[in-house]
Image 1 (spheres, rainbow, N blue to C red):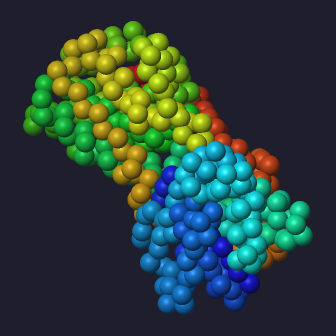
Image 2 (cartoon, rainbow, N blue to C red):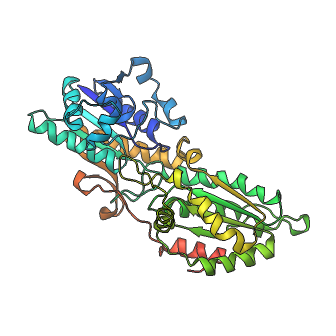
Image 3 (cartoon, rainbow, N blue to C red):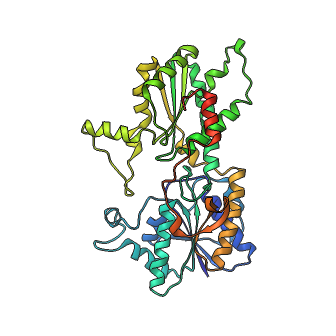
Length: 397
C-alpha cells in the first residue's frame, strides 16, 4: 500500500503535527505501507517531487507536534487554473494540470491520499479522485481542514485556528507595551481574515481574558485602560467611521493611546473602490483573491482615523506570520489526534471526504462529503461572546 500526504495553501499550526498524527494512527492499526509526502503541495505533485518517509522518521513522529510549518512544504497552486500553472512552468501548453497530477498519482501507485488544507486544497483532491475513478483506478482521499481564519463550511473548528488566535493574543501582549513609547499613540494590530473575522474576534477575546489576570496599579502609572482594546473591526460588521472616530478621539484624550484589533478584510470593498478611483491597479492571486499585502488595510485605517483622533504616532503591526507558523497548542494537538484517527479509519474503509467538526452534526467529528466543503464561511458577529466583548470595550454594536 502507498499512502500519500500533501499540504497546501497558507500555513497553519497543524500541518506537521497532522502528518505525525496520521502516521501514528496507521502504525496503531499495524498498517504496512510506504508513506510518501509530495513536496510543496500541488506544485510538487505536478513536478513529481516527493519524499519517501524512512523508517527512522516513522518511528519518531512525536517530534512533529513541537513544530509549526509543514515539513513537506506548501504552495498556492490551483489545479483548475491552467494559465497560472503554465506561467509557473508546471505544465506544457494545452496540458491539463488536473490530468497531469492524476497521472503522477497513478504512476506512483498511491492508494490513499491525505490532503491537509483549506477548501481549495480538499476539493481539488476530490477532483483528482473523480478523474482517476473514471480511469478505473480507485483513489481514496481523506482530507483534514486547516485554516487560521476558521472559514471552511461546514467546519466548526479548523485545525490550528485556536493556536493562531492564542498566538495573535500573545503577539499583541508585547506590542501593546509600545503605548508607553510616545504620547497620543495609535496601535493597529492587523490580524489575518480576508472575509471572516473569527480569528480577529477570537484573538481579541483571548487577549482580554489574559489581561483580566494581569495586575495593574494606577499609582504606578499602570492603568489597565491603556492596555485594553478600544475597537475590533471585522469584515462582517459595517463601520460608521465618523461615530467611531469620535468615540476613539474621546479614548485618546482620556488615556493618551488607542488600541485597535483589525481584520485584514475589514472595509475591503471600500478600500478597493477608493484605490481604483485613483487609478491604482488591484492585483489578484491565482485564486482570484485580492493581494492584501499590496493594499495594506492597516495603513488605510490609520489614514482614516489618525487626524480624527489626533494621533501623534502610529504603529501598525501584523501578527499573521507569527501566528500561523506556530506549533499547535494542547487543544489543537488533541483535535489533530482525534481527527487523524477518524481519517485513518475512514481511509482504511475506502471512504473519501474531509474529517472535521460538522456544524450539521452538533459539531461532532465526522466524515464530511467533499461536495459540502466550501470556503467563505462568515463569522457571526451576533454570537453572545462577541457581543459581550464589544460591550466590555465600549464599542457601538
